[in-house]
Image (tube, rainbow, N blue to C red):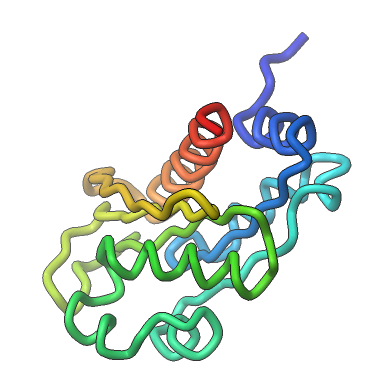
Length: 161
């Protein structure tokens, strides 16, 4: 039997705990939503995803404060935290993950190198963000690794609570 994917393990943990989640995605462009909805039964645990590829959507849809975007830039821990909180609020999910980063081909307007990614997590107990440096890989590799890490963070947090 094939080993379960991280999204399958997350689905099972969410279902066992009767917990729902949502995603706010920037550089992953909906990859988290795609991967979880590939799992049969995901509609029982996944409330939805918001692809907030621009600061306008981060601000207007997710509620990330404009002054926060101005001060820290979209690729930052404070914005990743605010995105996760916004996704949870917008979808009424129990918890949410967020991803914001630089998938390339060039650095962002603040000079963050390709491969810099912040992944957030929010629940009623906590909101956090972690920084990752995936290096100068292809856009596809960075996006896949960022989605993997978001699922791993979700899985880790489900085990804690």
